[in-house]
Length: 93
Length: 142
Image: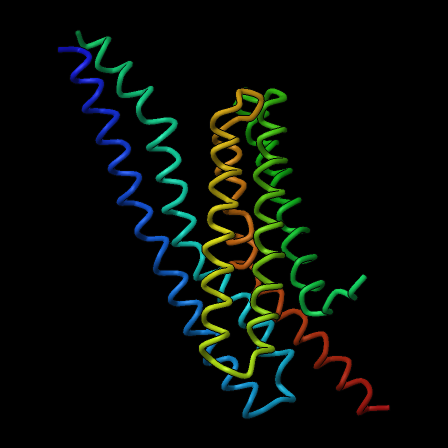
């Protein structure tokens, strides 16, 4: 019974980590669109290349944060959560 | 060796400097709460290094994408760059969690330092703008 419970905990943690990483798709799409528009802007006004690139870099770094949140949640679910949950389960029994 | 772009150099230096400042603050917090040991330091080094490397690679990716004439090419370059960098961060974070010589929490917290640095960016830009305005005003008076 204990083995089954531990198996369910591990399975749920792995599933949760996988679901969390779906959030990693968003920043890629968002950044792609932003850079495409930046290319358009530079094509229209080549003299503003430096300013556009600088703003783009900061914008991309901000957009990536959501992906980073997902990554951290996934890492915690895979490496930290199972140990804590199994400890709680064993102490409860 | 190819010369580093001035925008990339400037932004990476700004992020690296802020990451260093925030790392020192984090070490101090761990010292104050009495949880400091050498694993906190190694975890911080790994996380902060990964964060700055990720930012630098993102700058290079954006630079390569901006050079492209075609929007579709630019999109695919930045998507590829983002995916590869996410795998890189995953590898760093997993290493931080698996190896006992690193403190997992400090590795993960350090990954957010560039984002915190960007949070302070508007204040920094305002100061720079004021300085330039003052210089311009003094030059005009002369």
